[in-house]
Structures are given as C-alpha cells and as structure tokens.
Length: 102
Image 1 (cartoon, rainbow, N blue to C red):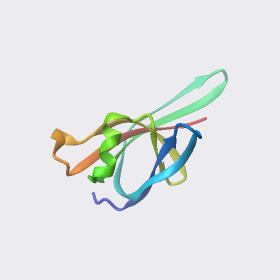
Image 2: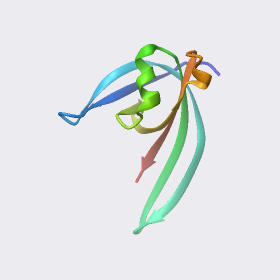
Image 3: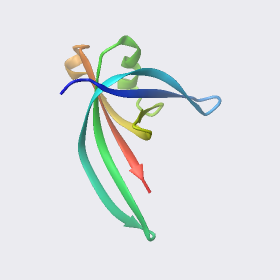
C-alpha cells in the first residue's frame, strides 16, 4: 500500500480547548477492527484504523502523549489511542485511532 490518503493531525490547545491543525500529510490507511453495539436504545459503531505516516521530528511528541492529538480523515474525527515508532527507527509512525459514530 502507498501513503496516498490525505490526513490532518490536530493538536489540542489546553488553554483555549480548541483544536488546531498541527500536521497535514499523507498516510497509508488500514481498518484494523470494528464493532457495533446498542447502548440505551442507541446504535453505536466503533471502528479502529491504523494510519502509517512517514516519520518527522514534529510527530515524535505523539508517541509519548496521544491524548492531545486527533486525526481528521474523510471528514471523520479519529481519537488517537496508540502511536508506534517501530524500534525507534524513525522511518514511519503508525497511529492507531478510533472513530466512534452514534
């Protein structure tokens, strides 16, 4: 697969609680899992995706703090739950993120 899907990574400003664009680039996108369940008569769908992006120093902060970042992909918001710089080689970073639809 090629890294040809446009994504935007946003960073949360803790003081203003606003999301600002932090990185715009391309990723290899792969759905890793999905589930659907009912809660209080509401149908909830949760999908987990892997976003593989080329390593740049700016993204290294996400590896240690995923809570302050999110991904926008195809007008969907994905909460980053894990980031992996495989063996700290600084080649690619894989971001694991959930998209929850109610």
